[in-house]
Image (cartoon, rainbow, N blue to C red; front, side):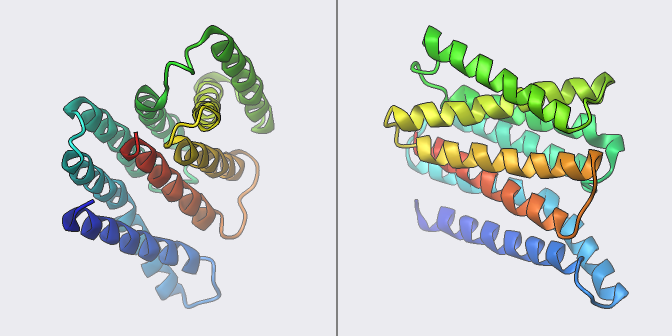
Length: 231
């Protein structure tokens, strides 16, 4: 990494901390005006975070001599994440759940295009991954009230891809790929983040839910981005 990419990474951390601070303060026993300001600042900063992370990734990958194809696919992954962030500015608004989730789904597919290796595509590993991810996906669907229609279909497909992401990371870690640890942590954090989001949407909201969702989500995006950088 050069000084420019490090500076952009520092900006990403600073904006993330500010965003998380605003998200946290929304739940404290403070004046209503201050809490309203925190909501506004959190909403303003949320769509900016992934573009800044994307700029850091571009500067780092180009400095490392990475192929343009990898850079473009990673930009696609973070772009779809940023679109999902914008659509789900209010994470508890069910009206935009399907559209936002589909955008995040596209981002995960981009990450998988970069991070899956030949080991993943071996017949035995592919069968294991499909069966295990399918079981956990159905479990997630049942835990979220076995929704029907578009919401139910999205939960099933998105849950399946989330567990494929985690499985791919574990396989890369076992296969001694240097980026496997980043992919595994990122995949696991995504499951936590989206699991909490689904619980608050379809079961019951709880205190500090938005803070927890965004903390695990931002860390997940960062770790998956680091996985691509370390390919």
